[in-house]
Every structure is written in C-alpha cells, then in structure tokens.
Length: 127
Image (spheres, rainbow, N blue to C red):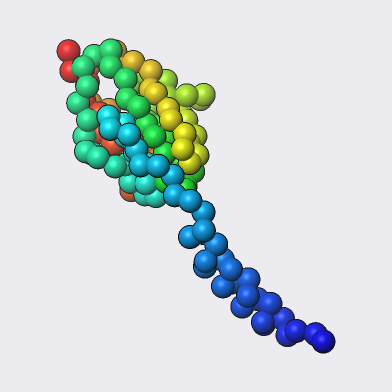
C-alpha cells in the first residue's frame, strides 16, 4: 500500500514541531557570567568593569552565536578592545564558555552577535 506524499510531509512537519522540545535545555548561565539567549544577552545590557578585568560569556541557549566588537549585528573595530578570539570574533555553541582577554584601555565599548542583530552589550572600562 502506498501512502500519499502529503501524509509523509505532514508527519515530517509534526516531528519537527515536537522534536526540539525533546532536546534538553542547557543549564542557566552561572552567576557572574553574561548569558546568551536566542536574541539577547541576559543580565544587564551595560557592564562596568575595572581596567584589566575580563568578562565571562556562557551560551545558555540552543543557538549558535558569533560574538565580536560592533553594534546591531554589524562587526566593526573597537580600538582598545581586547581580541575576542580568532579573527577578533568567537563562535559559541550551546554550553560554551568564553573568557574575554583583559580590558586594559578605559572607555566604552560595544559587543554584538553577528547572527542576531538585537544582541548588543555595552562595556564600560574604568580606571
């Protein structure tokens, strides 16, 4: 007996709706870290750190993020910001932790996710 193609397609769509809920959610971002949800950083959108400080990022979503200097999803140089990984960016999959290099130059900096335009973070480095 042959099944109509529409029934096979409907079964695949139904499976796609229910399978993501079967995947376990990652742990929440630990205290003192910047979490990454689907399209936003969790916690305060402005972080103030002393010169020489670092920031710990934790991907507590099921989405890939590509984080670097810039704003509104547009990667742009931020003179004085530390290198944020290979080629100035870091890719973060579910459960990944990334520690930024030390922020040695006082000033205001912007961090964004290249894949999610609403993900923006302002970092203020004090003396």
